[in-house]
Every structure is written in C-alpha cells, then in structure tokens.
Amino acid sequence: MGARTLDFIQPELDELREKGLYKNIRTIESAQGAWVQIEGRKVLNFCSNNYLGFAAHQRICRAAKEAIDKYGVGPGAVRTIAGTMSIHQELERELAEFKGVEACLTVQSGFNANLCAIPSLVGRGDTIVSDELNHASIIDGARLSRATIRVYPHNDMEELEKILQEDLEGRVLIITDGVFSMDGDIALLPDIVALARKYGAMTYVDDAHGEGVLGRSGRGIVDHFGLHGQVDVEVGTFSKALGVMGGCIAGSKEVVEYIKQKARPFTFSSALTVPDTAATLEAVRILRESGDLVEKLWDNARIFQAGLKELGFDTGATQTPITPVMIGDARDAAQFSKRLFEEGIFATSIGFPLVPHGKARIRVMLSAAHSREDLDFALEVFAKVGRELNLI
Ligand SMILES: *Cc1c(COP(=O)(O)O)cnc(C)c1O
Image 1 (cartoon, rainbow, N blue to C red):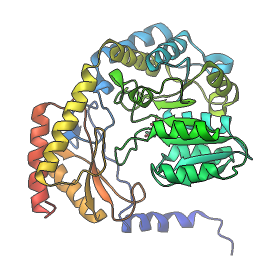
Image 2 (image 1 turned 90 degrees about the vertical axis):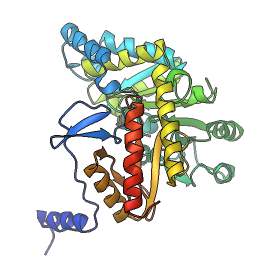
Image 3 (image 1 turned 120 degrees about the horizontal axis):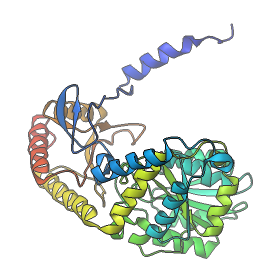
Image 4 (image 1 turned 180 degrees about the vertical axis):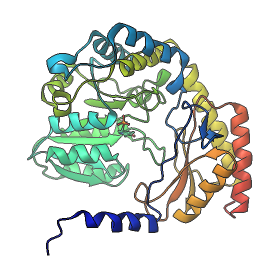
C-alpha cells in the first residue's frame, strides 16, 4: 500500500521528543532587553542577538513610529513593480556609506540575502567553495544555485588552497561566514582574499554576526581587516546587532546592480516593511554617531569571558562576544540550561545538529544592554550551577 496519508507525522514528532531534539520555544512576554519576562518571571537574557540593545531602543522605536505616520506600514508590492520607497533608498545609501562600499541592496532577511545573491552569481557548471561551518542559509542558497559545492574544513586555508588548485568548473565563488555563530571565531578573510586573487575566484562573506560588532563603530569584518574594495560581496542582516529585521547585499555598483536584476526573492517577494526600514536606518545613524555601545559590548564580553575562565569553564575558540560554554554531553547541557533558568538566567543549550555530537554547549550572547551587576549576578549563578553539576 502506498504511503499517501499524514500518518508519518506523529511518529516522527514522537521520535524528536525521545531524542531530546524537539524544539520547545519559550514565549517572551516583554520587549527584548537585558532582562525579559518569561512565564511571568523576569530572567536575565543571554540568548538574543540583540548585541547593542537596539531591539527596543527608544530612538529607534520613535523613528519607526514616525515613518509609519508618513509612509504607512506596507511596501505595496515587490519593489520592481510598486515597492521601492524613498526610505528604502535612503537606508541603502546610508548603509553603503557606513560600510564603505559603493552600493547596497536591502532585502527581507539575512536568510533571503543569501538566497538572492548566491544563485545570481553562480549556476549549473560553476563551483562554490564553502567553509564546513557556514550558516544554513548559505548552504540553501548554494543548493538553489545548482553549482557544484566543494566544502573545506573549518577555516583551513591549506585545504582551501588544495581545492582551488584543482581544475574547478566554471566561475568559482568562495563563501564564508564572517563570525561563526556557534563558536564565535572569525574567518581568516585576508588569507581567503589573497587565495581568491591567486586563483581567480570571487569572494563572498556573510557578516551577520560581525555587523555592529567588528570594525570601527561596528562597520563589520571588512573594516576589521582593512579589506575595503577587496571582497566582492558582503551579505548582512538587520536582525542581530541592528536589532530589527531585514538583510542586505553590499559591494560595487556593478555587482549590486547585477544581483538586483537577477535575484528571485527580490523580484518575487515584497520589500522590507516601512517600520523595519526606518528602524534599521536609525540604528545605522546611531552607529555612525558613536562607537560607545560597540565598546561597551566588547567590555562586557571581556569581563564575562575572563570571569568564566577564572571559574574553570572552557569557552572554546571564541574571539568575539559570542561565548560558548563547552559542556560536551547534550543531556548535561540541557540540565545546565534548566538549572540556570530556575536561578533566573535564560541561556539555551545547543546540541546536534547545530554543533557536532559530544560538543553540546550553552551559548551566552552578551549585549551592551547588560550592566556590570548583571554580569556579576550571572557569574555567581554559573559558579553555583557549575559546581552543583560537577562541571568545574
Ligand atoms: C543569523 C544569520 C542569518 C539569517 O539572518 P536573518 O536576518 O535572521 O534571516 C544569515 N547568515 C548568518 C551567517 C547568520 O548568522
């Protein structure tokens, strides 16, 4: 008998629950901030990518409200038909100036930015060379392109060069995350750029966790390494440090114009909403005025990571405010997260398939919104729970 019914669903859901892989999503009853309300309780928020506290920043909220009064909420349609508003162009112009690129295209999310840019640049008969730890949206964009995908071990420049030495098919595009989201380490972008030049490949960095974090006033990984004009495509998101929602594709005028002409999620899906656009624009303006919040974020990261190490925790390979607290077994990590929550800290455990088996961890996301008292409180709780579970 052919399997034509929905009978497969319940057993699969049961199996996910048995393996501890079922996603139970917490409901947040307050704005995103240093502290959030969950099930009526205030807990310290160590989960969000709200690096600079922009998700509920007063000035940014006000800018969104004023834009709604002027432009309404919706973009009307896809931009090629009806949707480009002057506020989209304003954001694209200011973002390009901020990042030090000629041009920038905004799209609906960082995920979509990869689905726009990768299949525009390469197709069947071309080759993508991709870091093994690249984000799921890069993997999906690469699959959608139908190019041949070659994967190199994480940040391994020797292996990358070996692949580039082969007789690769068609155009060659090297793609890397800027900051790797589960470990917090930084791509070796200067080496990648040098190898790309040597072997005639295009370069592409997804700087989702670098924007607002790395470089002068959060200008991102290209600024961090002083590589302006040397990376062909920079993809980014507005949903992390910028605190809002949306994505962007930045580079030379020629590259951005080409992607604008070809990208299907740009041509067939409506534009970023008015409040998202206005809020992101205000976030960029705040960063252009001052790097104080970025410095506060890094101070918090240094203080908290030093405190964890002093207690005897292993924070892995991080070079950024992303702070993995390595635990190992997925069940231990889940228990650690549960105990932290009982003690007033919201920090989710991360296991397979987000990280390899046996490398489960708590990922602490620090923010400029955290105060020194918040960090002291958290270190006390980590010490207590760590000792209780024999992890330190
Ligand atoms: C978070 C992330 C994305 C997705 O961004 P959204 O704007 O949330 O869709 C894409 N790429 C990388 C590397 C990310 O870390």
